[in-house]
Image (tube, rainbow, N blue to C red; front, side, top):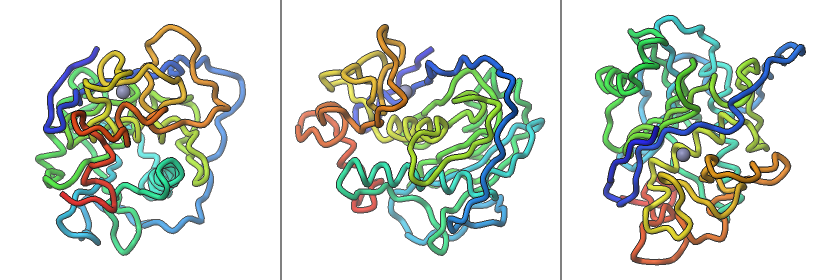
Amino acid sequence: MYVLGITALGGALFAEDIWPREQWQPGPEPAPEAPVYTYRYIKERSVADRPDDVLGEKQIHAVYVLPSDGEDKGYDTSGAIAVSMESGERWLENQTDGRRLRLDTWNGMLDVSFYRFSRTEAELEKTPGLMYEELRLAGFNTTNKLYAVHYGASGPFCGISESVSWAIVYLYNCGDPRDPFAPQLESFREERTTGIFHEIFHSLGAVPSCAPHKSGESHVSDSPQDLMYNYRLPGPLPDPEDPIVLDFGRDDYYGHGRDDCPDVAKSPFWQDGTA
Ligand SMILES: [Zn+2]
C-alpha cells in the first residue's frame, strides 16, 4: 500500500497510513454531541485562501474538503479544524520547548478554506491523486504552502501524504466514524488530530531513510508512543493512556543533531524557521 518518493530532504514522503484502531465495531451508544468551542476562530466559510498574515514564508494551510456527494458537517465553521490544529501546536510546544509550526492565519486566526470536489466519494476512493489535481486547479497551489486537507468522507486509509505539498486525513477512517470530529485544545488524543499531524510530519520529511529506527516506509520502530510509529509491526499497540511523543529518543527524525541525516527540526515550516 506504500508508494515511495524522494524529496529534497531525502526522505520517503509518499505514505498511506492505515491506523490499527480503524476497525471499530458499532456499539449501542449514540454518537456524542459535538462541542461548542469558545476558542477564537473564523466562523464564516471561505472557498478561497484569505490574505496571509505572514507573507512568503513556508506555512501550513488548512482545508476542509468534501466529495460531491458528501455530507457537510461544517468542520471549518464549527471551530473543529481550528481547535484540532491548535491542539497539535500545543502538543508540539510541549514536546519541543516551545516551537510551533507556522500555520496560515488571517487576523491571527487559522485560515481554513472550504472546497467541494466535482467527484464522488467512490471516484476519489479509487484515485486519491485526483484530490491533489483538483485542489491545484482550484487555486490551492501556492509553493510556500503545505496543505493540511481534512477530507470529510471515507477512503482506503486514515491518512496520506504526498511530497511537501499535501497531507490528508480521512476524517471518517480514523477513530470511531460514529463520533463527530471533536478535538479538545488541551488534548492530543483525537485520532484525526494525531492523524493530520502524522501526515504533516511525513510531508516535512519524516522519517528519513538514514534514521536508525526507520521501519516500513517512513515510520519508526522504537516506541509505540511515537507519532510516527509503524503500526504494522507485530507487538503491543500504543497504550491510549501513554502520551504521544515526537521522535522517541530524539534520534530518528527530530532534533537528532546529525549533519548527515535530514532533520525535521531544521524545516522552514517552523515559526522560527526560514527558507
Ligand atoms: Zn505514516
